[in-house]
Image 1: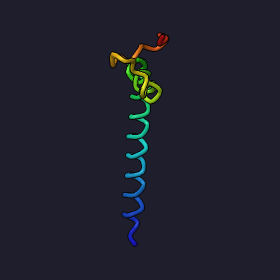
Image 2: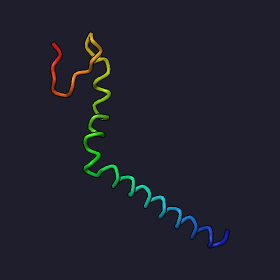
Image 3: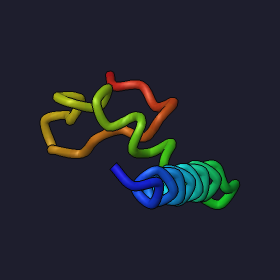
Length: 63
């Protein structure tokens, strides 16, 4: 095997690591807090709709 493959694998690994860090930083930007918070609450709202089909907002109680 030629040493070129080792260098190519190293460059590819560094590029993948940079892409991962870029996505990670993008996901933790403050402007994404509200939309990601809503998406995080979706599983808990399953079946939470009242008889009128409206899902209550966080903090509201169903009576």
